[in-house]
Amino acid sequence: MSVQGSLDQQWARVRGRLKDEVGETAYRSWLKPLTVGSLDGGQLRILVPTRFMRDWIRTHYADRIRALFSGENPGVQTVEIVVASAARPETAPPANDMPTATPPVPVAANPEPVTELVIEPSPSLVVVEDRTDEMSAPLDPRFTFENFVVGKPNELAFAAARRVADAQAVPFNPLFLYGGVGLGKTHLMHAIAWAIRKKDPSRRVIYLSAEKFMYQFIRALRFKDTMAFKEQFRSVDVLMIDDVQFISGKDSTQEEFFHTFNALVDQNRQVIISADKSPSDLEGMEERLRSRLGWGLVADIHPTTYELRLGILGQKADRIGAKVPPKVLEFLAHKITSNVRELEGALNRIVAHAELVGRAITLESAQDVLHDLLRASNRRVTIEEIQKKVAEHFNIRLADMSSARRARAVARPRQVAMYLAKQLTQRSLPEIGRKFGDRDHTTVMHAVRKVDELCGTDPAFAEDVELLRRMLEG
Image 1 (cartoon, one colour):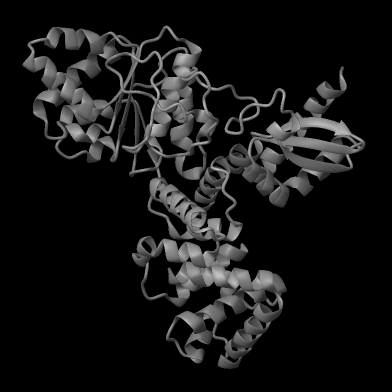
Image 2: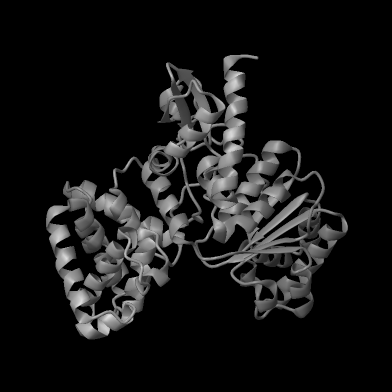
């Protein structure tokens, strides 16, 4: 067996151990895209698709990868995490793709590499059409499975979409994806279409919004061409309707959609639907249609978590080549929680401001540029919120804020929380002490003095405290 083949087998075993240790979600988000490179002089190269992922792996997983690989191969002394394109420029894929991925059906002669994330198209988005049926809306070439950031809130929807795209037979009909604005429904639908066309270009896929379906139906009625309309929609292999809630209350359109849906399901053709609510919650929709929509698999996409938002921001910053300090990305991931579109817009504003005025991106400049977005969260901060945010930031249990534990890993975050409670609330020292396990007010005074002292001598610690204060203040 070749040296590279042996390394690949060792890497497969290491990845299996890592998956067991970190869990399915973290493994899929951070470790699955990694590939093993070369072993030279005791140094093993691990290849990653983006700079942001390189930095994250170096910080969180590099030591564990080295330890596990050394157990498999004593010749491995150090591990270097490198971006794939930098390691193998003659064969490496574009920075947006996973190391083993190939791009979707070509859409331009020289496409620019992109790493778009769980973002649905905006009106200003330039999209490219390729072999798309005339009834279908254009597909965005950036919206592929490889470019979708997977986390706990969307893992079911992602897995279901992948299953539909890869299956030889229809696994469930329909696939119904639902979730709030800007959480990735459209991205997944485009990804399914790209994957199906790549696997079997002969299959006829129509993707369009419910509004366009309604427009096409009304146009057919106006020109007395309903038979051609029915034939065109009922002869497809895969029908994808986005934002189906827009036909609520439109009785004639619902009637036609109902019959189209039934005809396709009866022929075992795949139907994929998205909406902002589950089928049972769609108001203004006929009961029989709501029932049909819930026949197959209903997969919801929950609001993003902090970890998922941070991953999205990091890859977005990497794609546009912006050097954004990690603390600023953490600040945005904490503060912009509504949807991914707003998150991306906030990052674009910060980067554009820095480029236009020629200043470095800092926490203070980010807060100034986004003052209108952050104003909505301006409210009275509670001690409970402070404790929760500090516990999350330092990765300790919320219960440790009130426990008797005195280990530095617990005591220092507790002191930071007391300090912030004194700075950001109107509570007295005895009141603050009671919220921290009935501690005496002198304990709170000591915590405030200690944090002040550390902020003056430890810049990294001061930066942490400032980040927490800005996140809580908004």
